[in-house]
Length: 159
Ligand SMILES: CC(C)(COP(=O)(O)OP(=O)(O)OC[C@H]1O[C@@H](n2cnc3c(N)ncnc32)[C@H](O)[C@@H]1OP(=O)(O)O)[C@@H](O)C(=O)NCCC(=O)NCCS
Image 1 (cartoon, rainbow, N blue to C red):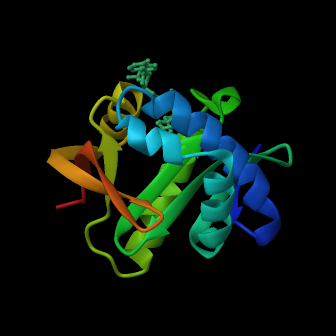
Image 2: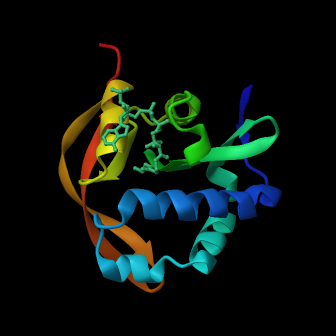
């Protein structure tokens, strides 16, 4: 059974582990090499710990298999372990993340996805988000940002 719950500091190492592997799988070849070089294990651990109070995790049988983070009106990160893909865990995390954003008073939740991340784009479109066009996404790194070619997706809201 899948449980979605707010993350606690104890979850940070597991979140970092899921994030690092899934990020590399989804982004190698689709983001600048300079960004890949900076995304080492330490960077995922530090960033996971720093955003824990705005993270929801999905647990299956007591093991964290995915997470979503929220930042302002943005659904910022959504990553699911390969073992849980195609199972509905990602759908549940996405829906819960969108619900939190709407309940926090953000009328138009959005997210960014790397242009070349075909699986994620197909997933978002299937789950009721629309491609709102190309963006240059500012990926945060120590001391600045690195631009990544991406697409903005917006949650389709009831009329
Ligand atoms: C993106 C992600 C959250 C989606 O969750 P998921 O459980 O894999 O999603 P699903 O399997 O339900 O749906 C994926 C869709 O892509 C399709 N798909 C699977 N592999 C694919 C591939 N290599 N290329 C294109 N489409 C693919 C699936 O068939 C499915 O589409 P369908 O329902 O129309 O058949 C998950 O794959 C993931 O964590 N990926 C790695 C990290 C990532 O990319 N995060 C998003 C960053 S913006």
